[in-house]
Image (cartoon, rainbow, N blue to C red; front, side, top):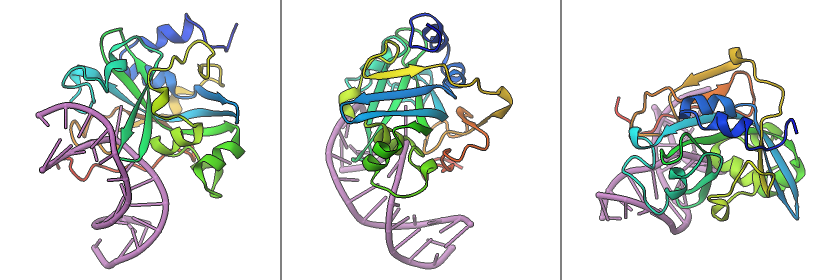
Length: 208
DNA sequence: ATTCTGATTCTCT
DNA sequence: GAGAATCAGAATT
């Protein structure tokens, strides 16, 4: 079935190294179905983290209870709790055992705007509903309980590769936001001109 | 417009 | 105990 979660097309694309998988994810949609309704976002901004080889990755020092799902197979969600109050979500990518992941930094809400707006508690611009990793997960209704959830088999959460194809010429790259180590590795990817893309902020702790 | 700060708690050293 | 893949609102760098 074209366009539905499957175990062949998207799964094999996500098994690539993190920077390649990140490009695959741009333009994909992520849906969260709940009794309250369904919110779907089209991903417009992501960041690659390359596990044990990447000083900026949570998995850099090896596996811990928090990062366990990153060491598993691609296509699952890694959720972490940030700054004492936010949840951020990553798609686990790469080979099983290699702890790579792609942080979902921003997306355009394409379904369930009313529900997303209620969760965010804002009457601001639609484009801002999914701007920033914590805002994006809040709009989707994703939290700690979704850590490890599968994304490829049409469950409560479903990642799809069926949006209109992304023109590779629209993809921009730059340093990752807010990281203090490997601050100049250009593994943030976004779609040029998308109003939902977040503003770049260098970590105040990053070396000059 | 840009820069800084407070909120809040989990994780690992 | 320190630091953290953030965000909104306040201060003015």
